[in-house]
Length: 261
Ligand SMILES: C[S@@+](CC[C@H](N)C(=O)[O-])C[C@H]1O[C@@H](n2cnc3c(N)ncnc32)[C@H](O)[C@@H]1O
Image (cartoon, rainbow, N blue to C red):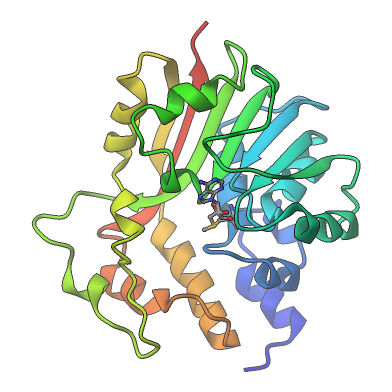
């Protein structure tokens, strides 16, 4: 379906994310890899502080949309690090956004990062940390790249509460396209905010500064998924599952912690 640029802007515009409103919606849609990463990044940034010229790791940055946003909004230097999207694919996008002196694309596997210990002032990760960070030992590893006092902030899709028994049928139902929302190879890394908080706290390595859920996160997720559906953009058929769930289980989780001194 054809939607005019004005309509796209009004469909995505929201008072809750004023910084995100400034970006071309077509650019965000063309480079999406899941829920609207600008909204997730803006929400994360409200719980973090950045100072001009700081060095930031954007871990699992995908198509570097969050990296461009961070560099533009906070005048910081961002190492856009990703596994699936190669640096040569991200570089033209970064240059087109005018951020070639601020955002540096790097090919990285999250367990073998090519950076010096203590190199970054902060680490962020949007819709990515759950792919590797549920490992009990991962926090200790990733924290080696910030100095004591440095921050790590993540936003992940997760559970608003634990399932009573099994995964609800509407999440495992096969959609007309053949896909299911709850892909067992990925979604068992979805956890509650309490789970994530304990997961980090028990290491004794960090002070948790923020551990919360996005208010009406499922509505934002659904709004985005429905728009992509209308546009005919493949998006794993998420909208029907989100509509049926109504935020009972699905939403977004934010954690920000400071490495202990
Ligand atoms: C759902 S995509 C989200 C991408 C981007 N943050 C966004 O929100 O648009 C998950 C990203 O995590 C990255 N990722 C998953 N496992 C990874 C690993 N082991 N090391 C580095 N990146 C990883 C993938 O390359 C992918 O780009």
